[in-house]
View 1 (cartoon, rainbow, N blue to C red):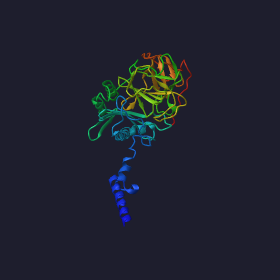
View 2: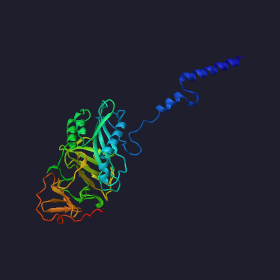
View 3: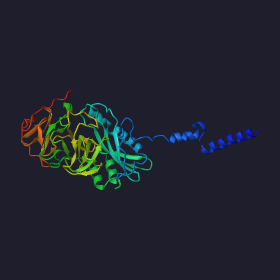
View 4: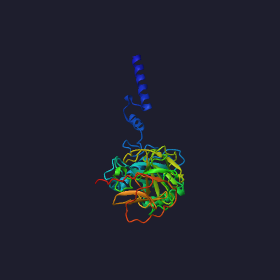
Length: 379
C-alpha cells in the first residue's frame, strides 16, 4: 500500500509540472501550436518569382532594417506597375512581359511612415526593347500606403512633401522635375558617356529588330570605362549592383546606362558629376532584353514615365538623327555623319555643329569608320 501511495504522488507531481510548463506531452495542443507559429520564417520581401529584390531596405544613413509593412508596400507598387505601365510595356515589347515587376524599397524614414524606391518591368529575353522604369514614393496614412509612380502628379506631390529624413530637398526637386511636365536635352548639356577625346563604336538597334533605329543605341570599344554624361543623382534598378544605372539630372532628364559591370559603390541618390566613372562595359541584362554580342553600354534618355526618342538629341558635340526611308540611325556634326558600325569621338559638353543643308535624308559615308547599314526590321 505504501508503494502504491508513493507512485500515485509521483504521477501527480509529473502532471502538475506539465501543466505549469504549458508543454503538453507529445508536443500537441494550444501551447505547441503557438510555438510552431512563432517559429515560422516571416514572409520575405523577395518571393521565389524574383518580383522583389533581396536587397535589404535600409533607413537613411544605412542603419536599421525596414519597418513592418515593407513587403506589403512592395506588393502594392508591383500592382501599380502592372496596372499603370503594363499596357505600355506590352506595346514596347511586342509581347506580354515574361517576368513580374522588380521592386526595390530603397529607403524608409526613421518613423516608418515614408518610403522611396525603384521599380522596373523587365524586357523579355530576346527583345530589343528597353525595360519600363519608374521611381515610387509612398506615405503611410495610418491605415494604408498611399503610393505613386514617377510620371504622375501624385508622385511629385509626395516627394515635395517628404521629410528631409527620407531625402534632401535637392533630391526631391530633381525627382519632381523628372516626373513633371516636358523636357528636352539642351545643346551642350550632355557628353558622350566616355572620356573626352576617346573614340568608341556607335551601335544601334540591337539585332536590327527595334522599331526605331535608335531605340537600341549602344556604344562599345575604347577603354571600356563608362562615365556620367552629365551631373546628377545615381540610382540602380532590378536588384543588382551591376547592370542598369540611371542618373537624374537637375533639369529633370534622366540618362540610363545598361549592361555595366564593376559599377561604383555608391548608394542610391548619391551625387555624381559629369565625367565621373560609373563602371565598365559588360553584357549584364538584369532588367531583361536581348543579350549583346559583346561588352557595351546601352544608352537612353528618360523623362517621367517614358524613354525619349533620340532623334535630334545633341550629345557630346554630335546630333543624333533617324530617317524612315531608308531606315537609318546615325550621328552628325556639320557635314560629318557616322552610321552604325562607325566610330565617334567624344567632343565633350559642347554644342553640336550646325548641320549642312542637304536634299537627301540618307547620310554620306563616315570619314572615320566603316559603314554598316542597319537591316530593316522584319514584320
